[in-house]
Image (cartoon, rainbow, N blue to C red):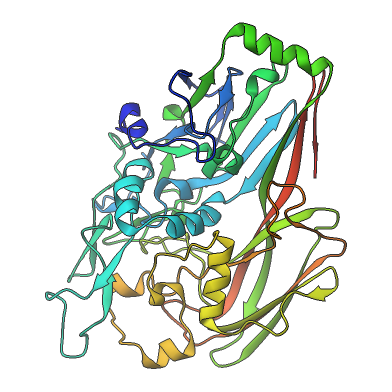
Length: 470
């Protein structure tokens, strides 16, 4: 069971607003206001105390369902983002109005996690907070054959699973029907990324309900797997709703100061600018190996200031046996892309070079590249024809599953509003792909296209109401 002092000892603080020593910090534990097993959902009311900080989160306990007939001892969370993958939707409402609403927040956060952290940091930090860790090394001596020298596999030291020659994944954070670890998902990973940079003044919204709604994914194959024997079915694992808890940290201010700040709202409203990220779903069918597929996607973003956009290529289902589960963005072979924003292509020619696409995603991640191997990033014709191929599940399980394609639209200005590009027409995404492999990963067939759109948003707080505008 994760103890709170173990979590807070990890040194988590606001990145842009360091907390002064003489300010009092307060931690509040809040049970769900309502919970529903039918909708697999919990709802919390956030305490309106001081300033809500980024160290807040929800406590979650995954487990094997009591009704499951799968008796394997190697059922576990996915190795990519752990318990984060079980969140299907997270919504923050203030006075009945949506401030943030994001579906499948795990993929956009995975792209950030693996760009800002080294594998060692991921193992030390994420293993405690989310129950996941992913790293690769060259094939160990115990697996080498005459034809497999230099092939990479999962690092058993810095990953949460260890593979054996009997095609078994031995899981370090296994799940059972009881006595499972509890993990804490930070709120800034659930669509509230603005908390990373500025605490939210919840004390100014005294008469407003601040409601956090979390819906969990009922198909456990999207976030859990069985490392040995029969693959999981959709209902084999679940989130224990009774164990869910909201843990919030607040910068505590004196009652006199809070009253003064509240009274000032009579004269002028408080403006809180933020960047909201939400998901738009599309789909495509990738043609047979060697046959090009041309896709054109239009996203209705008119009158919104676009900051950046992330594309993920997601399988339509998971098999219940792969340790990365469905927490992936699959490489679809050789690809080229361009965006038409406000009637103008943003690149002079299509971006078809694999290294340039990696650079684009690094720019999306504030000039930080993904800390994954080239084989994990993509599977192009060059790699499919020339790489040292291993049939070990240690390699095939993650091969080509980290192909995130991000494009940064920020113009270099500081702040939020004025730093992006206002869209006056639908954003067109031209995406062409030529599949090179039919397995590991299967690049052929129907794929879901997830577009995580980040736009400017403004929260205006007054004594009598709150307003939200794009």
